[in-house]
Length: 199
Image 1: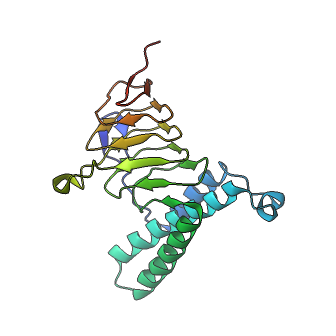
Image 2 (image 1 turned 45 degrees about the vertical axis):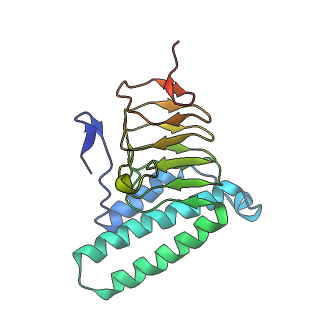
C-alpha cells in the first residue's frame, strides 16, 4: 500500500496479497459495524452495509490472486464474490467498485451511494446517504476522478466530482458539491460549489 496525493498523504494502492492480510483487514473493519445476534435477526441496516464491504474486500483479494495466478479457481471465486456484491449493492443502493477505498471504510446509511472505479480514496473514509464520487460527465474526461486523502468524511448528499485532490482530515458538509482541489488539511467544506468554511 502506497502512493499518494502528496508524499505525506498516503493513498490506498488496492493490493490484498494474502489471506492473512484479508482477514486482518476484515477484522479491523468489522469493528465499525453492529454484528451481534440481535442486530442480525432484527435486520439492522448497517449489518447489510458490513456484508457489502466484506464482499467488496473479498473481490479485491480474489482479483489480486487472479492477476497473479493461472489457476482458474481464483477467477471463479472472484466471479461469485463479485456477483454477490452486485446483488447486495442493488439491495442497499450502493455501487462501489473494487480497489478504490483504503482500510476503515464506513458506510453509515445505505441508499444512493455511487463511486467511480477510477477514484482513489485513503483510509477511514466515511460515507453517508446520497453520495457521489466520480467524474463530471464529460465524454473526454470519464476517468478524471477524485483523489481523496485519509480520514475524510463525506456528509449526506455531498458530491465530489472531477480530477481533483482532497487532502487528509477534511469534512465535506451535507449537500456540498466539491469540484476543485483543496490541499489544506483538516478543513470543512460547505456549499455549491464547495468552499472552505471560515471559523
